[in-house]
Image 1: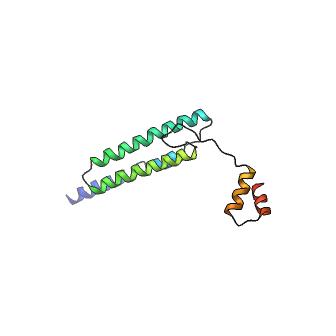
Image 2: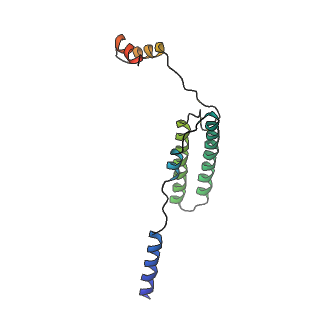
Image 3: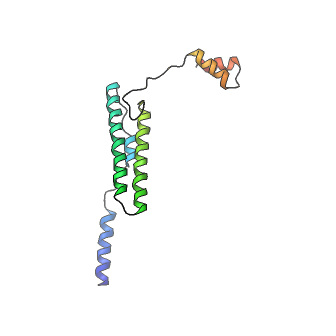
Length: 136
């Protein structure tokens, strides 16, 4: 009987040791997606992020409510929050206005005058140093 248990344990260990392990987790997969090439792709990506955040929120709440162990509840909620954080980071990386918005943030250019006045206002640099810093 003891030999059978050892044999089963050896087979189980062998099979689980050879199982394919995922190469990356959900957060890595989200953050490593290629950047959108144009504004239409960016809008589609922003819409996908918005729907994915909603899906993750529902998953976290639903799966947590079905668990009896407080540790499992926290595990599901934590994983859901980590996934949502990765999605929000992705939204910021591709310049979505907000994860729940279709508006894309247009890149803003700071003029020399704005740079110069902020440099003098918020730093201890003199006029020449601010001039050089804002002229780069």
